[in-house]
Image 1 (cartoon, rainbow, N blue to C red):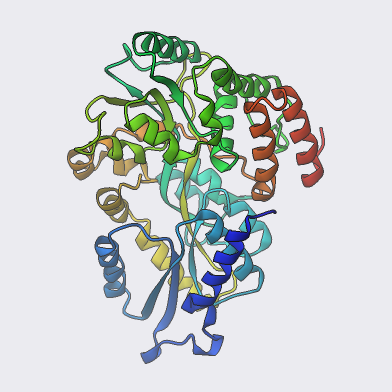
Image 2: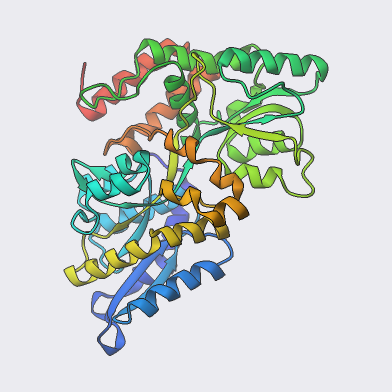
Length: 425
């Protein structure tokens, strides 16, 4: 996989500076006979609430000496760190935070442990949302537990449109009508830069046109009628003027800034943008609605599943694995889900938590997301996903930028994907 030089340089700095990477195996023993436990995670924001959650674990587990080590917030850098460390057999950290698309890759490589005894798949299916469970259960075995989830949604200006659009045709119609009244408005902004966010937008368009991205044999199926229609729709948004040409270089924040400044009618983004839109100095405060993505038929659309999971390093001892499983159970409990929602705006992976009176009263926006996260779909669950992602980004980008027709981009993507996976029609 090709990565920018800056990521490689940052990764080298991370590997050198993080204490867990320098600690020798024989030094990883805790005083007083306690089991040492190292948790690698990405910072959440103000650490006070999270520290108290960890302190509560230590009070309930006095036989464990817990150490936390923060990673950079960049998903690419974190992925490279784990790839380098785990491939080298590193055992100086026990619990790690993994992106929803990493689990099959890490499981297939033997880098994360099977934790099915502590977290049986049937229990996860009973207590957690189906999308996150589908992402962490590989070949019938549990390799991670959902920590918090995310989903692609549609934001719209309630003061500019009669209601939330249900179909693609309605979205385009409402955008044109709003632009006719205010010509300087942009119709619809989304994430079209050549990066992982583009893949999310394209998968949502394929699903919205009635397609699936995996066939019955688990093969990534791109050269299909529905995929051609979905990718052509995104290209048409730009060529027709509904979306500005600048979406081809936009990620989440670029789209949010345009929408939040009052310059767009619609925006596809993640729920985090809601709190930004409601800040006291926001020009669109009180003027924004949120809904499921539109579809061709008008049924509620399927947003891409995002989020993070907790897994156990497969290289650690059985004693440390057992302690790690206890920490994961603590961090993914219903009470921890409530804390993460109240303190950090993280969406719970347990559907029951959305009905908790504390969430309903204090963060009603999160409580209102239940139907959307229940409907979320994961990106292709395959151990090859991170390898395939570069191919998809390149071909999808060429199509929406008008460099190649969508059908040609999809044919080329299909050939490359089949070659990489060894799966053919």
